[in-house]
Amino acid sequence: MFQKIILASGSPRRRELMTRLGINFQYVTSKAKEDMNPNIPVGELTIKNAAMKGYDVANLYDEAFIIAADTIVHCEDRIFGKPSGDQEIYETLRFLSGKKHQVTTGVAIINKRTEVCERFYKTTDVYFNKFSDDLIKWYIKSEEPFDKAGSYAIQGKGSLLVEKVDGCYDNVVGLPVSELFQRLIKFGVRPGGLHAY
Image (cartoon, rainbow, N blue to C red; front, side):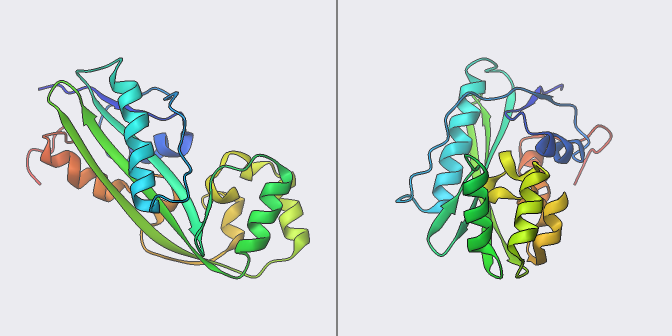
């Protein structure tokens, strides 16, 4: 049975990670606005945002399996979403320098027709090196951090900021692919040629 899969994200990083699953998918950018309410526990917040994005797209494609995700960087009860400009990037990276922080990605798998709404989140610890203001300014000039949660991209030049990762690396990039695969298998969504797992 052919099942239509849609990634509710315009992120090229998430699209690249989805490709690893070996399933055919399309992508549609959700117009849902992310909630950054600091009073909601981060795991719940990422799941809420992912579900909002997913249902926004599911309203257009109710027969498809919609996969949506939301990633939040957090440290010492502060959350760091996508930065608004140079100053916010500078302040975020200055704060995170030399510290351990967490990256949490919430995922929602939605199929309106079959009333599926599977939700989960995963958290990874990321340890930053202690780095100089000059490195932060150099990184800002690269323009890489501008649309990234936490003001860095671990798969790009942002890897230079990282001492080590404890947990799922893909989760830091934006999609915990291995766990997503396990969940999709439950719904009979699997790569072509894989009959059992």
